[in-house]
Image (cartoon, rainbow, N blue to C red):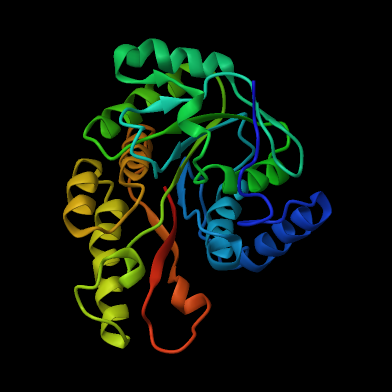
Length: 285
């Protein structure tokens, strides 16, 4: 079973050499002034690289400085209504422009066994979802021998327990495992049907404050508060992925999160007055 790319050539380069060059450039630009680890987990955004690539690269650079993992467990956002339960891609491989990445079938099986009826083994849940795909060229470039365990995580209370289960499996696996969650933050503007502060400079300020309230919970590892707050304030498209990641990081011994970078699509590419924009954050635990 091989999961084919669906946004290569749109969100990031599809040509191998161009993709490799862009990953190298983003990591080079993002690699200065990183805090010392070691880190066990991180959060990354998942927009097109032109908007959020440098922010995502900050997290991957910090994780790479902590060592080389054998496996990365990837908690993804869910952008389709059909995925209502955590869903793992438990076997096979994922295509990237830099080469395929194998799924760690043993770790996937152990997670499925521990979670039992609370997680589905369903590759179809990942077929049209981009939130993990856009991370994989970074993974392949930095950790070419590593395997992955991709898990789509809808924003339900189960996400916290899922993160804890994954951490328990990781701790007994005998493998060096890193956890990475994928989310964007507040989607603001008429395009997203969310304009509580109108448009313009005041809107950008409002959205950043909205993101800050969620980021405060993330950095404090308050996993149980993530999904309710994000649902109430419309501050993340991947609240389930955030909750699972923070819960796993906490279980793996992290004491806090570190905000490596925060920005918005408007800050990256300003054009006229702020109207439609999205928040992005890089966090390491």
